[in-house]
Amino acid sequence: MTETGTVPPVGGAVGGTAPGTARLADIAAQARVSEATVSRVLNGKAGVAAGTRQRVLAALDVLGYERPVRLRQRSAGLIGLVIPELTNPIFPAFAQVIEQALAGHGYTPVLCTQMPGGATEDELVDQLVERGVNGIVFLSGLHADTTADTDRYARLAGRGVPFVLVNGFNERIGAAFVSPDDRAAARMAVRHLTDLGHDPRRIGLAVGPIRYVPVRRKVEGFAAALAERGVSDTEVRRLVRHTLFTLEGGHAAAGGLIDEGCTGVVCGSDMMALGVVRAARQRGLDVPGELSVVGYDDSELIAFTDPPLTTVRQPVKAMANAAVNALLEEIGGNPVQHTEFVFQPELVVRGSTAPPSNTR
Image (cartoon, rainbow, N blue to C red; front, side):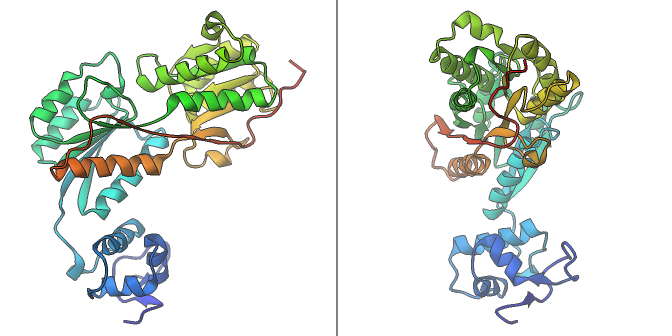
């Protein structure tokens, strides 16, 4: 085997690569190491740090190559990942990063998706526990619903299963939480629109049901940003619409906000934002000429919509890795602090926002 070029039979073909041939350069780029290091790992040679070796093996997994037989290790165990759906692109994005991080530590992820009419979160958890999972990551689960019974998580802890909760904090649950700063997200979206010249009394908010913690925080951030600009609580309530975190939900919210004279709409998800864009166009309004729209998530392909969507980006990679690290510490018998780790979002300005026109 040479230190550069291709690696003799590593696994199946990917993206047109000849069967049984993996390019060292591709694996090195994915693992962020040198080709020489990749070669040493694949040849089973010493002199490579354990963390680096795991990155190379994880790169093989990500690129779709099978690990050489001599390098395959028994799984360190199963980790459940419970997510609400796959139709919203932000959830597959989280799942992918979490699964890659788990694979890098030798764990086998088990993806459990809730669907209408399918298994509930509790049923999925029971199935995972029956299969002997080492831990569970919950993404936007019932922990984020202020009306849900939190005793289910105490019972899970009582069964000796470590878990970590992503997106949604509840002080009654003894666990590590990982969340974006939803209040800051709403504030920066409002600030962006007012900096463009939009009247704060003509900026609306389209979000999901108020029972969810991330929604409440976005509303609080939105209200605080408008209050700083002299907008009363009564006026704020007029500018908020609660629907669903879907394209149809955004479409439904847009009608009332446009009727209120809004020239800008801040949305609780990118899918909602696309629904607002569709509703505006059905009314003959130009986006962003007559209505500016801000999304939330910055999920994949959003930069390629028409117009490219201005959005507030969730720090998916940082949050996912933090969740995995916290869970692995718990599994290793080193409990992390049962508190909320909050990550800062980032405003990404594209083509769906502009100064308000005088035509409306």
